[in-house]
Image (cartoon, rainbow, N blue to C red):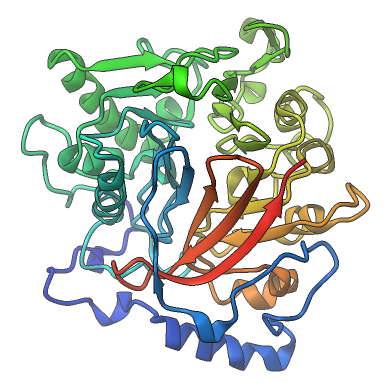
Length: 457
């Protein structure tokens, strides 16, 4: 039991508590208009330094239905529940992959109101979204689900009020909510099977994370008992997250495992190099954190490339450069190299997206998966917008934002979108991509803005 949990989260399906009232798109836009008086917002048609001058659908052309995936295309959905990270990829041959399914139940004082509303758990909304969109690929489930790291906003927070799964003794939240509704054929995380690295992991030392991890581990044990696949993430591999239906048809597609637990791909074959010192040489306070151990991958489809690396930090302020190795994000970003689209580490929080990381990735589009009032903070966003770090144009899209942050972080006015499911669509020729923003106020999957095409070399 945690004092930070808002007990009104678990509303009946027939209504939403007023304290957890969902902000509709109209209300959101109205509030934003008010904030414009103090310079917290900008005209959507205004270009700012650091933005890509791509075509944007006029606001009057909104409300079109999202077109389903078609064979040969790559769709990457960032599901905007406002309560944690969740990504769904439908690959060219219909292979389905998720990265994370986070669910937070913290008080609204510091966090974003749930999208579409609080009548269902975040994981339920994510599962329903996934189920709708994988139908186009005639998928019977999720082929791969990768856990970036073992924190609640990526696997699902545990609370005592959560219902128990129909099969198994684990509570339904985040990933287990996905599993309750959709078969997960293969689950991959950074620490299976012993979960022994590092020995002072947050799920060992921190009570909140310990309860959340125990619930996740019950689910892992249940899978093993049922003969379902669970694997440890293999840094350097280009096979573990590969296409499963017709890989021979799409030789230009691959997923490279870049990093996990400080082991980073060298760029040569499947080789990796360790960037963390041996644990027995480190003082207790300098043990790697769960965030530092995050997995990272690069999806490549012809000229298009996509990067996501969990909560990898660029710096830890409490260490103040006393130890150079904690800047694991820069090392991993250099292993990834320049990409078309990059997901901001750690939701754009204060320790993320350092200059070397941004300079190495240099994407045409950043995606921020927000759920907290500090997503993002000033410095990481400044870095992502900086033309000094790389001169090319870029756009930034966020799945959800806390309205108070528009005042604290005024550069948020430069983002192309602040709320909605962010979908990256790559056509079969993989020479360009578009970004489509889907309304997250309901389940109609209306397109409220289209950006692009972003042309690739």
